[in-house]
Length: 581
Ligand SMILES: Cc1cc2nc3c(=O)[nH]c(=O)nc-3n(C[C@H](O)[C@H](O)[C@H](O)COP(=O)(O)OP(=O)(O)OC[C@H]3O[C@@H](n4cnc5c(N)ncnc54)[C@H](O)[C@@H]3O)c2cc1C
Image (tube, rainbow, N blue to C red; front, side):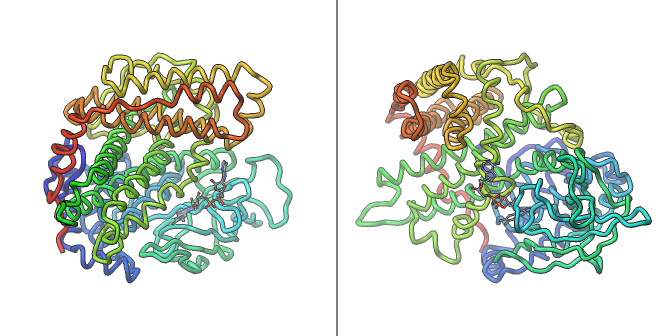
C-alpha cells in the first residue's frame, strides 16, 4: 500500500539504523497517545518531550548531519529519501513536531552550504547534543522580500560587526542553538551600492545576552519568534557568506526546505483519512451507512486518489533531487511543485474528508481538528503559492518546446549522502534549464483517462503556440501575473501527471491500472476547470477562448473501475489504523 500505516509499518530500509529511527519515532507518539497529544496542542505546550526523545536517540543528528561531519556516527548522512519518511511521520502526528524539524533543516542549510569549517563543526556538535536550529530570513515589514532586509551588521573599527535589527516569523527562535540570519553589512542610513553588495549570512545563538526572543507571534505549540539583535557581536568567524553568495545561500536553502512541506501535508492527510473512514464507515443515518451514500463514496475516492498522487509525485521528485548536478537542475521545477501543488492538493483532501465527517471534524479528541487548521499553513510558508508558481512558469517554454536529452533516472532509495544539495551553485539561469521530453512518460500509457489527458495537453500546446504567435499581446499577457498564474496551473498539471506516470513505471505494484486511471479521472476534471478559468480571464482573446473550450473534456467514466477502487483501495482502509488513546 502506498499510504503509511504506523501500526503496520512495512517499508524496507537499506540499513537497520534508518528503520530504528522511524520505528522509535512512531513508538514515541503512540506511547504519548492522542489524549496527551491533543492536550499539549490545546494548551500550546512547548514540545520538550519530543526534543528530549530526539536528543536521546540522536535523531536530528543522524538525519541532518552530512556524512563528512558525522564523526563517530556511521549512520549520519543527509539522505533525502530517508528524510521524506521522517517528514511524513512527523506530519502524521502533528504539524508542530514537524515544524521544529523543518526550521532546523532551514537553519542548517546555510551552514552546510558555507565554507565556514568552524561553524560547521560547531553545528555538528550542537546537533549531537540535541540542539535545534533556526532560519532568520523574514522581517515584519517586508516578509520574505529579502531585497528590503533591514537587519544590519554594522562594521566596527577592529574589523568585527555589531548585529542590529529584528527578524519576524522565525521558528525555534526561543531555543535554537544557532540561527542562520541574513542581513546587510552597512552602517545605519548608509546608501547601498549594487543589488547584492551588502548581503551577509551569519550565525547567532539564542542564549547570547545580546539576543532577545521578544515574543511568539503565533498561537501554537511552536515558537515562531520575533527576535532582536541588540549590538550582537559578530566576527568573520560567524559569517557564512557575503554578497551574491549570501543571496544564493538563501535561495538554495529554500530549494532544499520547500520540498518538505509537501511531505507534511501527505502525513497529515493520511492520518485524517484514517479517522474519516473509520468514523463514516461505522455511522448509520436514516438506516444507511454513511459510506453507502454515493456522494460520500465520491468524496472518499477523490480524496484517496489525490492523496496517492501527492505521495507518488513527491517520491518521484525525490529521485530528481538526489540525481541533481550542475548539469541537471530539473529538480528546480519539481521541488516548488511539491511545495505548491502537493500542499494545495492537501487542502482539497481535507476539504473532501471534512465534507464527509462534518461535525466530527470539530471534536477536540480528533486529530482531524488539528489537520483542518494546520493544512492551511503549508501552501503559505516558504514563499506563497503565487511566488512558487511565478517561479515555475519560467520553465514552461523549455519544458514544452525545447526538451533535452538525459539518461533515465532510476528510483534512488539507497543509503547515500546527497552532496549536491549543499553545492547547488549560482541560482541564475532558470529559463535555460532543460527537461526531458514529457511525452516519454505519457506516450506508452494506454489508459482511457490518460489518453483524454494527453489530448488536453495537445490543446494546451496549441494554446501556448497560438498565444506566442501574437507577439504584441503575448508581451502584455506575460507581464500580467494573474494570467501567468492561470496558465501555470495547466503547466503544473502536465508535469504532475508526468512524474506520477514515471513512478508507476518504476514501482508498478503501487499504481494499478485502475488506480492510475482513477487518478487521471480527477486530473482531467482539474484540467477542464483550469481551462475554464483562463477562458474567463478579463484579457483572454477570442482565439485563446476557443482553444480553452477545446481543453474542456469529460473524464471517461467507468463504474466497474470506480467500484473496485472504492471497495479494494478505499473502503478497505476502514479500521486499519487508530492512534492509541
Ligand atoms: C507559522 C509561520 C512560520 C514561519 N517560519 C519562518 C521561519 O522560520 N523563517 C523565516 O524566515 N520565515 C518564516 N515564516 C515566514 C514565511 O516564509 C512567509 O510568511 C512567507 O514567505 C510569505 O510571506 P508573507 O506572509 O510576508 O507574504 P507577503 O510577502 O506579504 O505576500 C503578500 C501577497 O503578495 C503575493 N506575492 C508576494 N511576492 C510575490 C511575487 N514575487 N510574485 C507573485 N506574488 C507575490 C503573495 O503571494 C501574497 O498573496 C513563517 C511564517 C509563518 C506564518
